[in-house]
Image (cartoon, rainbow, N blue to C red; front, side, top):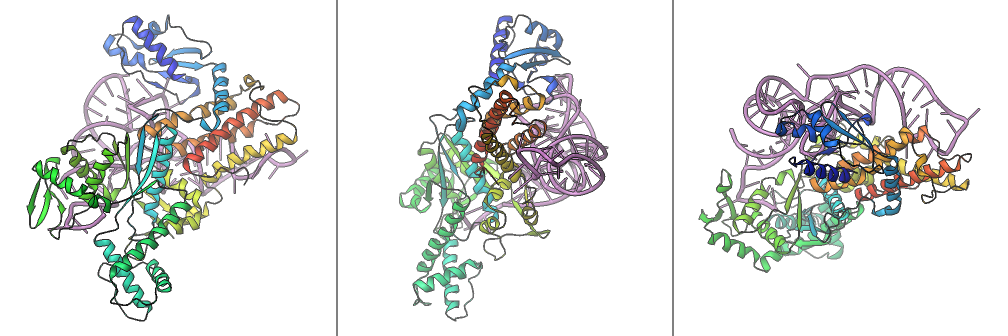
Length: 543
RNA sequence: GCGCCCGUAGCUCAGUUGGAUAGAGCGCUUGCCUCCGGAGCAAGAGGCCACAGGUUCGAAUCCUGUCGGGCGUACCA
């Protein structure tokens, strides 16, 4: 309907020889203002130097509107043109949902294009924490949205299993291992204190009981990496996330990509040596201080492989690249983009989604989290407490750019009045009605149902609500924000519950009306299921 | 100091590219089960959209400044 009206207005503007700017159509909040509103008359008022109402009248006079789509229109103060959709249009849309079913909501905006979403990317130094969890769910859900928009999506996990931190990890495990053998060995300075390393040390002892203080730390390091990665992958699996590619930073060294970047930047005159380190002139970018790319020890900082990695992403030819980072990485990406730019690479298609921190509250107290210290809460523990569905929903129900307060006590208590259950209940409730209808010999049958019977206020409101689904998906894709989806689904569930309270669906005295209402419920059920599947949440048929 | 994010009901948060009388959940007050699942619905109270200017037909939304909170500002990742 929006497309149709936009087309008609454009045609009419051409006819009148008026300027065609951006035609903004919106869905009015109040039903008395119709189903689609245009502000075009007000927008043109200045340019045409005429009153908006007058412009609206001239525009609309002589406009031909298909009565199968638009039933009527009104021109109201201060110059809105409000369009009211026809009942035929509404029922046609409903039929469309029932025809498309699990494809309803998909669009072709990314058709034939590839997208890569990089998320999690935690180095294997410890289990995933509550903080990683947000990124995990955000990234996976974004990937789902892109899939629904037609993209061929690659989910990627970038990691580094070399360098100082991993060495510290190996040393920490070695200390724990020797500790189990009765030695009193202190953890290395800045080492990893988490209890998970004690468990891993125990496993190692089982497998290889004869290691000692002479054993090369490399052995401990690689055992720790293997063990922790398996813990991480199991967490990801529990929450329904599966990466297509695990990209090892080391490969960038082995294939010489790191050196290539250094030599290109050097040729551009953007590198210089100081105090034994190699510096990158980022001051052109506006940073106060230049950044170190290679430490005086000869080891690169994280920035250098990050640049090389993103250069590879460009070479790999993705049409869209999405990086999901936590707010603590906010300073890294401008450097990377700057480096790509000076290397003459186009990077407009690289989008960065930054999410703010998760504050975890337990018994009203803020739990500070640090992987190296022992006092963190893992994603696994969170899933144990509230379940994967609740975890996934809570992580995406808020805007990524807002801080997320995750109150564990509340999340547990909310097993009774949780928005997740509200949505799942709506879905289950529909199935319950279907089961009961079947007992009475009634089934949803859109082909033969007389959908024009669906004309009561709450019923029309519910149908209208269903039509918004594709718009929400499209909006999520465009903005790379996903919280509008849970918000939308919640509203749909509310519209359903309201409809349910007002109208009895199964009425053996009125089979025609029952059929039509069952068809409507089926449409709602399809959308709930589609929406929940994008969120990675179960849509139960009974609870 | 500088950069990014946030500031909307008692609390947690929505509010599509600027639109019409700013919304929801929780909590509080009060109704609705002989009836398809009450994990629900209805009604009520609760607001100077942090503050001050500006842009315009029109601002919670855009611009500037101020105040408050978070994150960063490493030869850690």
